Length: 503
Ligand SMILES: NC(=O)C1=CN([C@@H]2O[C@H](COP(=O)(O)OP(=O)(O)OC[C@H]3O[C@@H](n4cnc5c(N)ncnc54)[C@H](O)[C@@H]3O)[C@@H](O)[C@H]2O)[C@H](O)CC1
Ligand SMILES: [K+]
Image 1: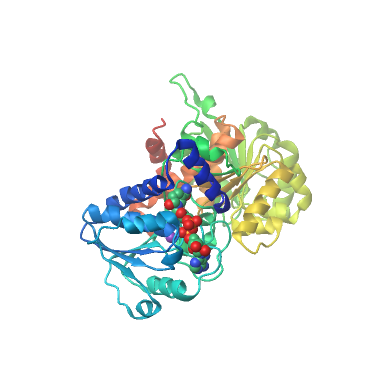
Image 2: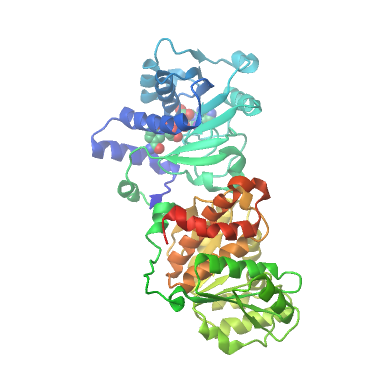
């Protein structure tokens, strides 16, 4: 698993790694620059005009090394020196000396920054990295503001956009990258939604610091990637039968919101459940049977919302239950949820209106346990724990909540954060902006519920569900882009198994 280490530990990590492997710090910087160039060459053409803006610290050193390597490969490069090079770090200085004489390198003073016109297709930002220790001001602020204003230029940040602190929320301005290429692991603050406009797309490149080494610096934060989920999947044999793939129930839906529970159940079936049933109010019976003929339908006695009279004895037939999508929060729905919690103690996903009810009926929180996966989006989460001033606070509150109630909290967003009661937090790497569409959360509920029903541990079901949901979203949006809708994500689930090479 890939650890996310705080910026303050990186200096020690580098020093220990260099000592342990008997390599120089220059070698590590060269690895970083090579890794960046490996990524860059796949994206950009030799005839692109590339400007590399370098500061006087090690981030600037990376930029200078990148300049040298790309220039040797035939790229059209200009290096701009921004900062106080009398105070340059040793490796920055060395890489400046290693710049080929023919490679243009321009020292930028304040006048240049104000007046220079840039004729570039690509800007590489290597002014400041994780060493930033105060808001941008003066020369550097002017430079970054000017770069941010350039249009029709592709903007790439080295390690972290200049100005973004690695572990805190931004105060002031920062480089607005289209892509950030982060070394070895994504820096913590790259996970914050507040920083989305600065980070752009995130790409992580390996610079040779192995995972075992990183784990010595573990802060219990991990970046969830393909290799972390593949081994968590259960393989089924050709002798497997319907029962092995699990029977799941999706409970919810109300008058006008029946699609939510239909999408959850369909997602569960596409994820592989042997049987999916929906528990809905009367008004939903025909809708579900017509819209999803593969699902069984159980009905509550009440007409428009689930209520306390429903086929209670049926609950025990199910290996896992997802509850909440489209359920509503009126008094019938509340009495249903109260009854449900007293009867069903198996693995369950608690989503949407079930979370909104928990937020209003706080005594229900005592029913949560290690079999529960809560999947709030940011607003639902704040209804549960109170308003948060920023994402860092939300992340810390989700960890506290998970520990207190011993349940798993899936805080949905661009890098969905999964908190476990033992203090671990996983940040998802899949998914994209096109998944911000109504119903995408209902799909996730169906997927996690399905894995629970297939016999996955609560931990594995959650990690596999979140990762694969994002992957299905990426697949669904390849051509549909902003026209992607939740049922497209459901239809892409089978293809996501192909990508994972799981049958
Ligand atoms: N293991 C790795 O991940 C590696 C990372 N590398 C790169 O090194 C940088 C971090 O380098 P560092 O020298 O510590 O910091 P910076 O380059 O960010 O610059 C520090 C420099 O800047 C001054 N400073 C701080 N804030 C400001 C400000 N607001 N305005 C002006 N100046 C500021 C500070 O005083 C220092 O003088 C990391 O991001 C990677 O890119 C290695 O190359 C390989 C290993
Ligand atoms: K940078």
